[in-house]
Image (cartoon, rainbow, N blue to C red; front, side, top):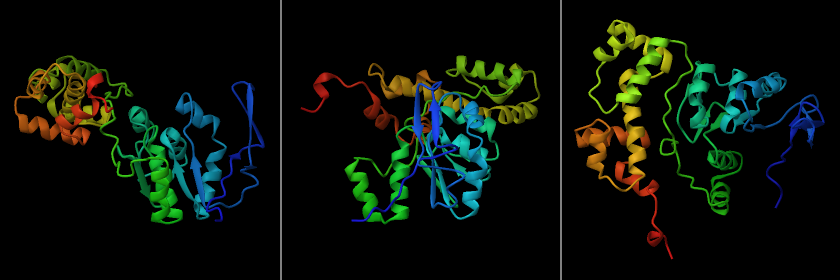
Length: 293
């Protein structure tokens, strides 16, 4: 069978020295030599993502030109930062590692960030964190060959192709990538007192702002409404408790600030794509006797 893909490592130069010259990578070709291609894969950048984008800035005009020439472009995990720097993600859907979403939103507010395993928007593709890249690669295999080959590839590498959301894996961390001290103060208060009855009037008072001004500034700073921030904080606390086995779901519900089982279940599922019991079954510590023989 003939090869369906001709994969090449493209560099700015023929040889790339890494880790202060400890080792080098030989590129198959360079951006000055490769005039046209069908698909560009941007790997995850390493270290500080902002610094990595600067270090790889010479790729940006080349990626943009290839896309204008008809190439499709995909980023893996936090490679989305370099892809976003090209402008090709402006007003398009994008995913990246859930742990980097706050920094990404602060850096690229014009991009429509979603918590998906992969996105496909006008020939620009992205994947979520870590092993989500497998889902994107197999999706691209299907795009460039056919569904049957994609299914066989997924089976060979034992990849669950029906994963759509990163929500079950995400850990909520409220964004601190802003300089609004009044909102920082409210975020800290929510995170310390989420079990209590919280309302907008109280939070606006803590911020020493009018209620409408407070809501606007909170959304501008965190990219979330104050109510959504409270809900995400409570659900994150519930996740941690569900990973243990010493409390019932009802007890956990009360401990994180809810007293309506249906509301708790609805909010928890919206945030995690799982019911509380499904989450517990997936992540609760397994005793030795429960492992399959």
